[in-house]
Image (tube, rainbow, N blue to C red; front, side):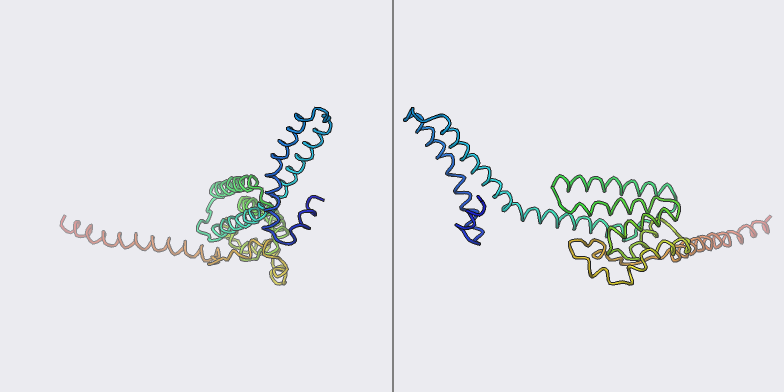
Length: 262
């Protein structure tokens, strides 16, 4: 009723609505003082009448503050949600760059633990900011588990949950995570990637609105396949071997000359 009264007086004018509400709140202290003076000037005024007058004025103040809170902070809440989504997008984007490739279980545990801790910090931060986009908070823990888990069925299950919660994820994203965890066996990789294959071939990404999309805005700039990573390591090893052989060849004539001199 309070809201309808202000709308009827101000129409669709947002500024007029807020100004009217603020003016109404500012008048309440003066009315309270007036009620108190009336009670002092007219002793016949009952305490019940004074109490009801003050209660009505307090109610007007509380309702007005609630209206101002809803109207003025609505834009701030929208901004917090957008910041939340942008921070998570950039965080996942940094992971997908694949600058770190785990070569041991110890590295995977360390990286997964770091992702898990930072995910908790971000979740706490945006919870304190009262972000309504809490659905974003599960992305980092899922990625952490995919990096940490050992057996293929467990990884498949975790990827399945990730796909259900974030239907805009694609094979290239999952492939990038598998590269980071150092999974080189193509059979295991294919078993895991098949989970998102059907979704990638469908048009489900078009049905995901922007405010519910995360991975759609995370490009995988260079999808490094583990086979290529393995070949690069072999190339580095071969290069090191050839270099050592060259050094040995250079040393051999010197030793032969020393033998001739003897």
